[in-house]
Length: 326
Image (cartoon, rainbow, N blue to C red; front, top):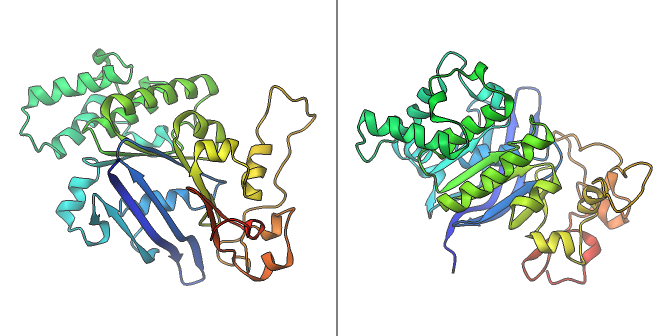
C-alpha cells in the first residue's frame, strides 16, 4: 500500500487588507501518496496557487492568513516546523516550479550557478565543489540541455529552454514532492508537449510525487492519476482521472470544462462556454458557489451549501447527486 506523503485537512486561506477580505481557499481536503500525481484544475482565481503556496508556507505574511486547517508532510505539521526544518524542506524535500520561467531566473547569474545554489543550500552529504559541478552538468543533461551551456545566462535561452532550467533547479536535490504551477502556460503547443513528456519521464526516473496545477484538462489527462476540480476556493469534484473522464457522474462545472475542449471528432461552429465569471472572492454567493452560472441550478442550490456525495473514491459537492452515498 502506497505511503501518504502530503495531507491537507480543511484548509482555509484568506487575504485581508484594511478595505476587504478575500476568501481564497475554503475548506479543502486532499492527499498525495508517494510516487503519485495529483492534478488541481480550475479557472484563474479558483485558489490553486494559494493552496500550493500554503503547503510551502510562502503566503505573504502581511496579507495572507491560514485561518483553519492542517497541512502534514511526511506526518509532520508544516505550521509547527521551525525555520531550519522549513528551509530544509523547501527545495530539499518539496520543490515548486512557478508559473512564468521568464521571471523565475536571475538575469545576471549563469544558469549553472543558479542550479548550484540549490545544491549548496541543501548539501547535507558534504559534497565537494567538484561534485556539485558534476551534479549541475548531470541535471542539465537530464532535462535535455547540453552541460556545456551551464555558463550561459537566461537571456541566451528560449522560453522552452528556460522552463527546462527551472525544472532542473527544482529537481536538483531529488525532492519527494514537486509542485508544478501551470508549468507550460507561457509555452507554445509543441514545446508544451515536450516539457510534459520530459516531466513524466523524470517523475518516473526520480520516483517523485507531483502536484500538477493547471487550467487545461488535456494536461490532466496526460500527466495525472487523481484530480481535484477547484472552484471559488473549494474542491467540488475529486477522484481518479478515469472517474473524471469516463465516470457517469460529473459536477456541472466539470461538464462545462469538458464542453469547452476542442474535439476533432465533432464538428461544431463554436466551443461551448461557461456563462458568467468566477464569483467575487470578497463576497461569495450563498449556497453553492457555482449556482449563478449553473444551467442545472435548483432553489436549494441558492440557499443551502451542498454536502459532499461519494461513490467509491469519487466525490462530488453538488445537490444533484443526493442519491449517492453521503
